[in-house]
Length: 479
Image 1 (cartoon, one colour):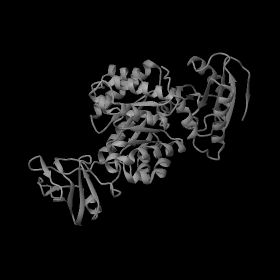
Image 2 (image 1 turned 90 degrees about the vertical axis):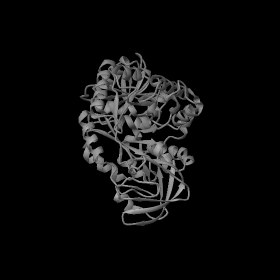
Image 3 (image 1 turned 60 degrees about the horizontal axis):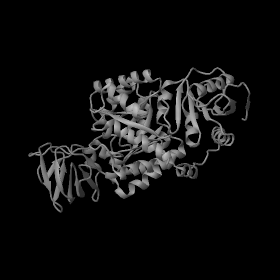
Image 4 (image 1 turned 30 degrees about the horizontal axis):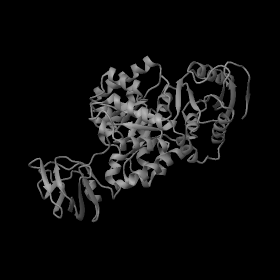
């Protein structure tokens, strides 16, 4: 099934989309890859969903990416004697290590490392930012705060601390167990929640040991401040606007989203925009106009993929949500302004042979009116370079690595095909022409621009560009 669009759709699976038939319906509607949310569900449930996706993959003869999204370290208050209390603005409220049920003056915060890191002036955001406290004083095992924004606080609500780098690993004990389960299961991507610094990604990379690609979720101010180092360490990023909008002023999130897209594109790494994109469709058959505009903005900015969360995991109109997303992406990409904006925001090239070859491939393809750009890639780097150029020609990625094919389902404009390894340059060209013809990327007599690395099979070595005529042995080397 060939999608007639460049931007990809990542759909979350959950109670509303757990059966094999439901997953197939989402794929048929336009989902390119699926997210397993390890904040919810058991390992057994995730295993069944994973098996359904892989069975679907065999039926449709197309790679389908699977992303395991780890919960991340959750900071929560303890419990209350009555289940909840009302905090009034201006009142004093204490957070401590006492496990006894709380009341209107105090509650347990069972994280001594957090209490030790707090300082007067720090803000605490509780229950997704609905309540705000400001720390007035700190002593061993206790922080006294004043209530800035009051409201009802109930058992085990989450705590966000935007002012400091929280002294905890991005991987809790639960995350480590989930990570090992997910990579052994055979997922293609691991998403790290609450990344604060590049070291968080490096820690996960050691544990993953090459068994999956890493997507860093950007949802904390400290991650935004250190984004260059995080992007360098990660294989992709996700702009997780839910927690980002809690920890930062809401009016700053659109600006930061654009900056993050730009940074990821400059590095040639996929960027996914997530959270509340079509939120109203959890209970409504149609989205709001503001939501459609939000999706369109991400596409105009050149995001690689957009994500559906509760819309497909727990919504009442799961398939329709994907259809609306699919039609919105396609409509934006037909707009001449879309191409003008992509051309105007094309990233600077690195002074390398690989970047020079890839930029030349785009220019040559546009100049000669080639049917497509074909990349032969082992690790995915050659195809991602082509994607970074945002060409106005389709990108056909050929790879002998099935996991590479699945990972590239989240990269802009790449239609990836798992193929046998090439033996030499002529074999690369033969496979490119045969696959382009079979997948209807080109007709006999049309031309292809082909990029690859030699020696064949060398990861990251994009150093060859050729033009070939489909169905004709005539070809010549340009680089």
